[in-house]
Length: 586
Image 1 (cartoon, rainbow, N blue to C red):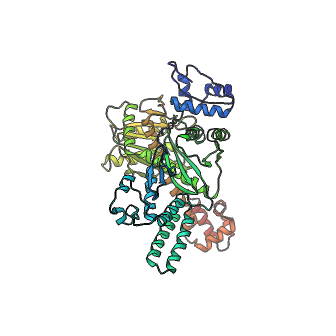
Image 2 (image 1 turned 120 degrees about the vertical axis):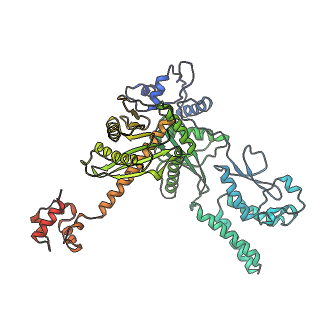
Image 3 (image 1 turned 30 degrees about the vertical axis):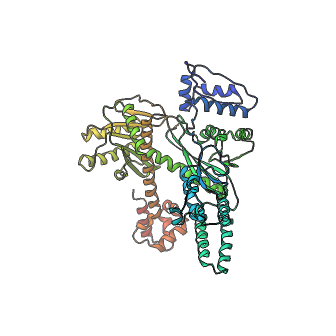
């Protein structure tokens, strides 16, 4: 799909071109990305391939080459780091990134340089292989500091013979292959042999190695079966997406990595992965390590096609699963939890937050950069346990010390307008008395109705200088379709879903919603833990038990009349009247 200038906008594939292209031009299209794309399309070019697999490979090639703005773009051009074990007489253990031209073994790839250095530091403590450059190694006349602190056995000056060093190389190799249990078993046997030979100092060294290996086994998520798996988690907040990948090699989690692809407002995890995974794996020849299995959090539509493409591109089939159990389910939970947490961290990053404030200033055409935002939301269950939340953001992100919750009482259950009016009156009466700072922008989760409540409250309290902003969800309630209402603007406007200022509004709106729901659930749970029968004089534990056993539960007790209550053992007519009055005092 191309624009009027012939610039490429989007590349897609389909088994049925008529159906696929027609789906973009329906009257009712929910996707914000699709609507924005259609507005710019001037012409469509078609290439016919012999199979859907070839179409997927071509799609991947074109996206990598042209980077169309309406495709999900994977911005990652770095090669992956490895641990390199040379083939010298006294092999060197080294960090490696780039072409594999040297003779020796390469272990990896690892998800980050930090993961490699962490592994090498552990191996240096365990097996004391040299990590120095060859030129440094060849020109030593005395042992270096690494030998002095017990991190190297000093092969450069002959402090260790080739056979002993070879055992350490073997153990290092087994450990990097994920066979740490075998390493521990072999060192245990060597410890016992040294102990039997009265070589207690050497036995103590073996003992310390075993302890270190056992601790590694405790810290790592190890399964009895070896496995090479990549596990994906996807988290979406507003128009921002985080894809988190957990790497498992030889049955052990070796690290993970985050991606924040440009999704143009797409919020469905399955659709995001449909575009993300082909770009992620079909470039594996450039250094991407292909696992034997891929685990995704939701079912995706391109499983068969992607498997065929990987078979054609890499020469082996990869299993792609969305339903897993036992250990893999644990890994999947890790991936999703990390996706959620890293997205929250990304959203709360101070630099990102400041850029969103700057974008919000432009979005709302403000003369000065806003310093402080407050957002309110209401939560209840069919009118029960109504709680209002107030959350505060400044240039540093969420200012949790200024968060407040309000228990809403004395209103008609379920009346959100009355609840909003009450919380605003209570909040801004306090602020006017000097108990806190007034915000630059007051955000309410709702449309014109909620905004009018805020306007009336501020006018009645004679508060000026606070801008009012209402956030109404679109008809499909999807992120990116929000309509923003300013005071005096009855029509509202819908920003582009990739606007950072809108992301800030979505973030504070979602945070106020989360904070309100948490408060409501706490209040509801507390009410559930206390029986209404406990507050009635003369009704102790024994009589409460008789009532509940007789009627089968509290709801039936509440429905019973005085005559039925009086039939319960230990309940007199007068007490039945008191119980009935207490349960129906409203």
